[in-house]
Image (cartoon, rainbow, N blue to C red):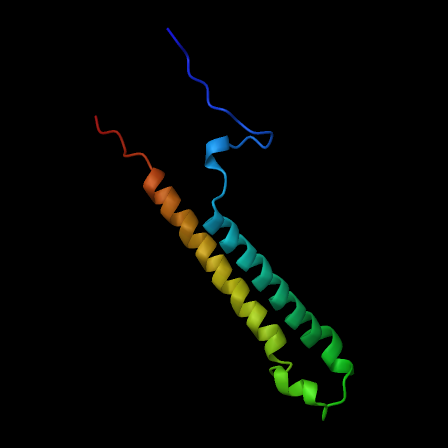
Length: 100
């Protein structure tokens, strides 16, 4: 009787399940998007209040009220998505009641 073993890398992942080129490109795209968003928001919230109101830099940003509203809306949407995902997983994994 022969036993077959799967090869695992140091990270615990199977070596044949490594990321493909498409996965890496999507991951890099998400990292770049996050960096751009973080930079834009940081300049908008931290730097812009110290720049004169008539400076041309203000043309590239929304009014300051949105710097609080948009992350709040994003947080609410994120919480709704997490709740919906949790509800779906719990619904699919529920066990039927035993009837005697």
